[in-house]
Amino acid sequence: MLAALDHPNITHDWFTTVLLRVSGDGLLVYDRWLIDSGGVHLATQVTGTVVLEIYYLMYLVSFMMVFVLFARWRRDGWLKVREHVVYDAVLISLTATLIGAKAAYIFIYNPDFYFKEPQTTGEMLHRIFLNWSGMASHGAAFAIVFSAWLWWLKSRAPVVHMGDVGCTAGAFGAICVRLANFLNGELYGRETSVPWAMHFKVKNSHGNALYVQGGKWFEQVSQQQPDGSFFKPTQPYHLGYELIQKSGDSVRHIDPAHVPLDLQNAWLQVVTSPRHPSQLYQLVLEGLLVFSFMILMRKRVKRAGVLAGIFFAGYAGARFIGEFFREPDKQFQSAENPMGTVLGPLSMGQLLSLGMLAFGIGVIVYYSRRGRLISEIPMWPPEKPKASDTLTSDPSETAAGSVGKSTVVTEMMRKQ
Image (spheres, rainbow, N blue to C red):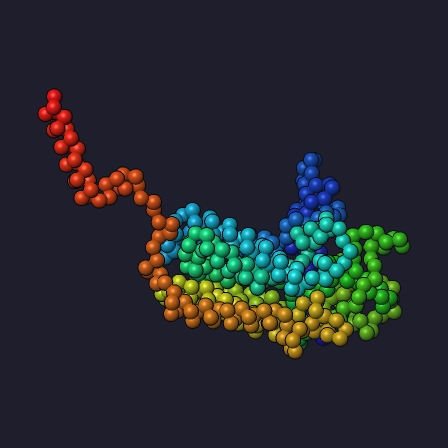
């Protein structure tokens, strides 16, 4: 089981997905170059708070696609909205995604980390906005639907038709986000012996690497301990794992059950046993296939709302399948439940996907029968009538008014 591919962040010291840090010394770019008042220098140490990494950059790329699709499909006449509505839609969907995805992760996937540990308000905000926690796609989908409903209540905008475009961009976003998951070495798969299996670094919910020394487990922390080390005891990893020792560019894999005597007191980093690179599976299933199918169906769908339903059902079905290869979230793992499932063999992601699948099928059925024909949707918002048009809108009234004015003028001339 020791023979497997190593994720790049295990093998290569130059590999990082952190794009920008802020420290007391200045800005640290790609964990390589320090920018301060004296210019640009090679960094001697990696410190500071992460403010931009590849995961959140991919969210930005996804919303650039939202804007591209809205603008392009509006210009070709398929999307019946005026230009300024494109900006409104992008802003609303961006805000809903960020709030919904983060809130779902906090309240559904990892409430203990945010609410059950002693913390100050500042620490809470740091955990929400600047730590390694993730975003829940199911929460993003719910928030977008809810915000679209509120928008419709306020303005009667054609949010269902706009949702077709937004959901297509959402499928593209799944490609970006799953790629970021792979590059970060997170949300990896279950144990396997397939030839393309990979080792990934093991991290705790804080994003800190795990180490073993003399059979004791430790996690890396930011404050120095009394003995001079930067580690403290932590709970053991419940699923299969291996140990590595790095020396320069070489990586030595060690079976934790048979640690050589010369390494008994060495710091050995914990990595996973060989795993499915399930992030790439999900990239293909949830992203590439769903996105391609929606692009193919856009000109074939006749009624607004059907394309959005295809996304909800397609993404949920693909996510349900992908979860069989992906390791369930660590928050649900324990010594009694090492796999981390929440209902029999099903993970939390699969349970949420079942609800999303039912919603998507319902949307397809409803709008296939009762949705507005896209060809008949009027431009929104409608143009306001001009003042001159209002004054001359009724020809009979205009004619009557002219006759009345003529009579008055004639009468005045007669009196003179």
